[in-house]
Image 1 (tube, one colour):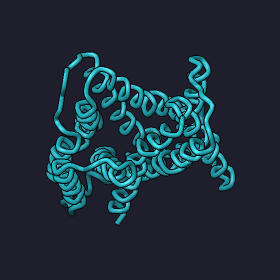
Image 2 (image 1 turned 180 degrees about the vertical axis):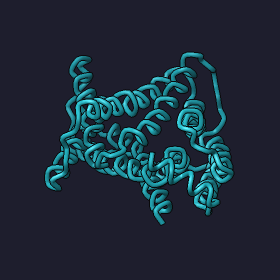
Image 3 (image 1 turned 45 degrees about the vertical axis):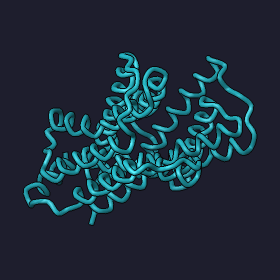
Image 4 (image 1 turned 120 degrees about the horizontal axis):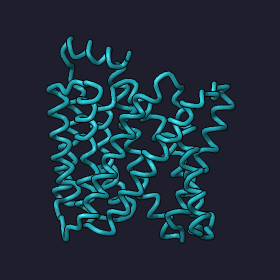
Length: 299
């Protein structure tokens, strides 16, 4: 039951992240820009989280080392991965960038295997293969003009996000998920605001853009990160990475119904393959695998 709950929580997290580009597109149509919108998103999310922490009387006072680790998780993990992803789009086609970036489940599984000795069991291997094949169909394999800098940026973004997922599983251990999320998001808010002032990137926005920014803050930041942390605690880093691969499916569906973009047949087939991968991941595993999983959680 706890494993199924972890899959559900991680899936909801991925869905919330999947809606992020849709909310951003709607905000851009109303006069917002990237730096301003991201700043509104993280600042609003940080405010919401601190209110929750204080109202619930959470123990938010952490050791200096733990605070530094959580801040680094936000700065070098989430923000850096996003920056690498969008920078790569300046050099190579979007489908190729997406294909490279969403290879992060492979990176997570491989790194977890070599660094933390997490076993890649049969279910995980099958689920991973199905998910990645499905992602190839979803994003398309239109490479376009290959630029080495763009390839390196996209791969770097994938590694940074993989590191973010792996580090989350280790750093949040022993820390309340809400408190951990609060520190991570606060670090993102501080960095984006400083960057905006230094580069003079802020623009005047209307209330519609602010509303979209707030929606991004609540659903695509607070709920998404919090549920991801909870999911990792229940199913481990590698499984969380595989479940998170439904994110592009949500993006495609939301873009179709909200932004009016069409879904192609390869995208539909790819979506089905990813869902099949998630179903394989939820199949019962052998007693030995259960014991290994429990031992990894206790470490």
